[in-house]
Image (tube, rainbow, N blue to C red; front, side, top):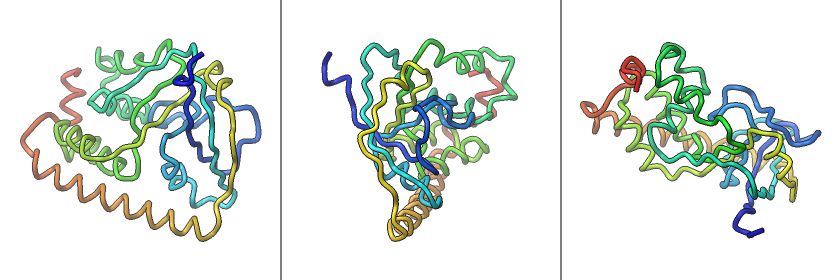
Length: 213
């Protein structure tokens, strides 16, 4: 076994991990139901900083013998997020919908960039028809997005080992709340800039769905 298959990741929990690790997140996450882990420690921290009993975990993930779907920073990433957030229902009968809905079939792990605080804003602008796919992709390229690994099968979850667990102080939570709000404002500014720059380039989300890809 090569050490390159073992990576250190982070997971934030609103109330702590009490049972065996399992792919039991809520349905409408970026890559669907699974156990979410990130390469950047600050990302899960900003998501859980409003919760009283929040905990952050350092994990060791052994990906030996796991089927991993690696997704690049492109329109397929955005469409997979759209599908898992229920944004593609109007295209349910199209070949595009079928392709995206089956993208992760047969895999144990999905690895791709995370829709962080900045990216949430830009993605919403795209889904709401305010920016084109060209503007979106250029936004993705401009942002320094952390990567997330999502264990979507029991087999993958059994290969995750908890290394350490810690709680957040009141001071830490206040700092993280301010950081999260700052990141959102950065996302708003970036979306507006890209909207102006690429106003006439590319397709809007509803056009992509209507054209079936």
